[in-house]
Each structure stands twice: as structure tokens, then as C-alpha cells.
Length: 203
Image: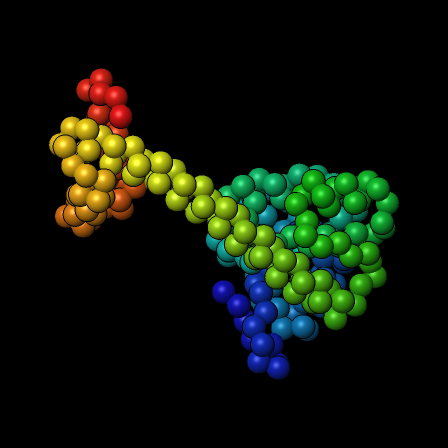
């Protein structure tokens, strides 16, 4: 879900991972910018509970050398549900950069950070994260379509051989079975191929 700021534009729901004054300051800045901060978490258990129950769209991760254990919580959360992560660090030291990368951060800011800069980083990171997720979905769909096409070609060969059908007739047969069974052509074809293989046939 998103909330509307004073200007009427949608802002993401955010979970702050951190503790003490820095976490409270981050929450205040986010709230001032119109974000719905669903909570702050200083422990892995609290982070997991809020992440599951509140379904935030963005994680703002407070990083410091003595609080790197919180960083290790984030990959487990992202394994449940991918979302945008923005790290806010005390410094730009290599240890902090490595920690942010290990946590899957899309953005990185150095404190002190203004409310406006924090909001801008979230917006850019959220946009890039969603673009990357779309690419992943498209790649998965292409792979799925290619796999289905292979099964369709093999199934048509089986029907042509077993039933003496022409290639167009075999294709129509698959279409008809797809409609009759309310399954995709790829799924119908896969079942035909697997059945043929079980019977010891060769396509």
C-alpha cells in the first residue's frame, strides 16, 4: 500500500531497521515527507514480525560498525518477499559499503542526511528495483514460453506419428484439448509427452 503526501503523490510504506536516536530521526524525516512508517525494529525478531505483518514496500536500514548484525537480518526477509532496501550509514567506509551490498541495498546514504535527500533516494531506488523485478519476470516468462514451445513441438510430433495427423491437424488437436481441459497448450503438450515417454514411445 502507499500513502499520499501533502502534494497528493503516492509514497511507499517503510519499515526502519535500527535503534536509538538515529532510527527515531529517520522515522521523523520519513513521516515529514509523507511516508507511512509502519514501525521501527531494533532486533531480528521484531524486524521479521513487522515485515510479515505490515508488508512494507521499502526497508530503510541504519548501518553502524557496532550494529552490523541487523544487516544480516535483511537477506532472510528478502527471501520471503523482495522489496527495496536503502542503507543509511555513519560513514562511507568499505566495511559499511560491503554491509550495504550484502544486505541487498539499492541505495546508500551517509549521515547526516536531509529528509529531502532521503526521500529522493527512496524514490529512485524504488523505481530501479521495480524495473529490475520486471526484467526478472519477463526473463522467467520467456524461459517458460520457450519450454512450452518445446513441449508443443514434441507433442505435435507424437500426434503426427501416433494418429497420422498432419502438422496443422496436430496443432488444432492441441488447441482443442487446451480449450476442453481449460489448460494451456504447453501443459497439455507436456502431459502428452510425459505419457508417451512413460509408455516407452519415441517422439
